Image 1 (cartoon, rainbow, N blue to C red):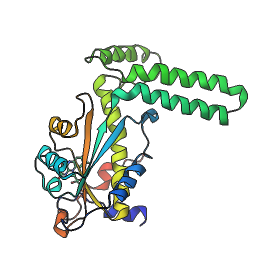
Image 2 (tube, rainbow, N blue to C red):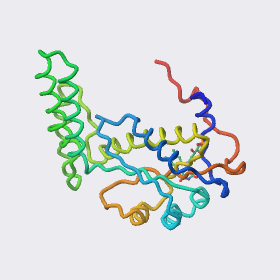
Image 3 (cartoon, rainbow, N blue to C red):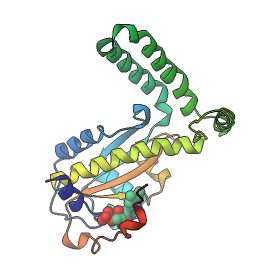
Length: 241
Ligand SMILES: Cc1cc2nc3c(=O)[nH]c(=O)nc-3n(C[C@H](O)[C@H](O)[C@H](O)COP(=O)(O)O)c2cc1C
């Protein structure tokens, strides 16, 4: 399929065929492809749970308010944000960055580039991603406002805004996954209509993670797609500047 065909084939599917199971390995390979999605600062603060166990599927269906897409799904993939892993991920990204500089940068630039990378991943990342009852975000916001008087600066640094940053990156992985599934001829539906407390309970997840989206998976029945695709006029969304 061409990219256009993949995009046109992907629809939000609300009823899946109960007689068409999915190949776990193919779904897993689509999840692996989703890791190629970009993330902010390459921090990759997300993970996912590929659910095939019928008991857990049942619990998740209940958590998804018994929506038909969940009720009829053969499998589900739950995308979860893990902001609290920022230190570990920053360490891994920094190490890879330094290795890359040593391998590919001119000798006379290496020291300077490594210093910048260390400043970014050892200094800025913990400052951006660590949380403390919203207070940390207020302090970051004040600091950004002050520095912003003199130069351009990223201002979306409150704890709520940083959480949005993490969710944005995770959503790109979600879309990558759904397109990979579409290429396999598999169908999906992204859900945010769920009770996050019940989802965490079903998957034994900690309180401090975020449930980004639950993707139901299966192969569509013809009536599983609700009507023709509706999009608002392109002119309302497209602005050439
Ligand atoms: C973030 C997000 C949350 C969604 N949540 C639900 C949901 O809870 N239940 C549902 O049936 N569809 C849900 N959808 C699917 C949308 O309703 C659907 O994508 C939209 O109507 C466009 O249809 P299409 O995907 O077939 O083009 C969600 C989509 C997104 C992107």
